[in-house]
Length: 205
Image 1 (cartoon, rainbow, N blue to C red):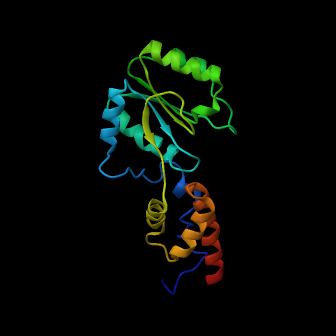
Image 2 (cartoon, rainbow, N blue to C red; image 1 turned 90 degrees about the vertical axis):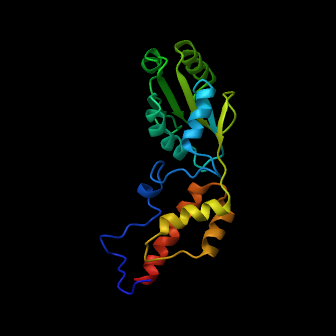
């Protein structure tokens, strides 16, 4: 590690800061030979309907953000709704009234809607011939597009990307310890490593 590292350097930012780990900041890592064009082909076979299912912190929102530009390249008119319990609910009626066969409605946090609103959304998409992609923590009855899972090997790969070029290096034992407490929730693991990074900076001061 460089001897001239200064924790107060203006060029330094904690690699686990929100701006580096928020959905879309890192591309979603698909397994094996699966690619985003192949996912789009699968979605097209499913009449542009699909669900992304997985536990908290396993990359659903990151996958959604990674899919959006690929959908646009495929000619889809993408409309995105992020729906979380702590946020004000988007008004659905104007969005649903403008659906058409080229439109791709993408809803991140679909389970946060009531049963009634989920039914309204699906009915409106079906009537307009619009596509619907949702991210959810549980099966919502749509065709499966992808199920998000993270193991320790993938977590380490993502963390090493974030640490690349950093003057402070977090050892594997710290990563494994954080993962043991929070896995498979990568988001919570990264939050803990943010605090660990700040402590290491203080120690070096």
